[in-house]
Length: 236
Image 1 (cartoon, rainbow, N blue to C red):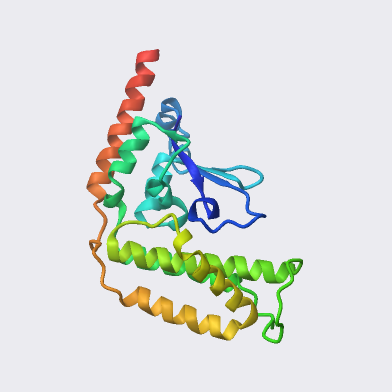
Image 2: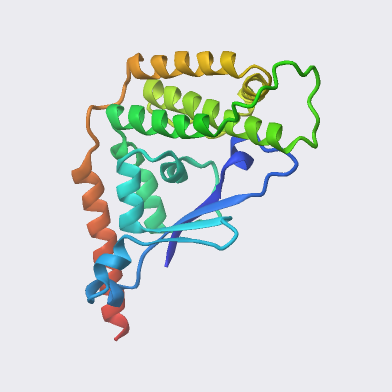
């Protein structure tokens, strides 16, 4: 049963370009019969990704585990402005979204995610070029990964300082795209910029606690799982 689903990625960040395809992320509850049987451990840790990569669905337990580690690609689902599916169970997860957060985990998760994007930024020399060709696939890819890197650094900083994840970054669109162009035409300058931003992310004072409220999260998961089991029993 799907309990929460929404559009994620560049579309909701306000950073989409013409070639961006919408991505969808969701959380589902595995069937009670499967959870209680021999396949239970596997069922609880399952993630489904559609063949074209446009849809990702995490089982409730798997999602909670990722969110407790502040995984940016998973936990952003709890901070969307709108949803295509939001059941009472999904609302229960949103209601405790702050309980998933901890300053050390946010720092590490967003820094690591930004670094993964940074490493994908091409180091091929574009410094001598004065103009960008929209047909240049390498430059397009470089800019896309650079934008992702900067977006993650900005989101991580906001989350640490305010305790809330900024999803709509359209107000920062020009800055993010400028960073993408910098990575394409001046990789060394972009590298220095990222080093500075990573240092700031590591030292900034945070309003978040030192550890997540795992007991509160666990209580919600137990409640949702037990309710699913009761519903399954009533049907038999």
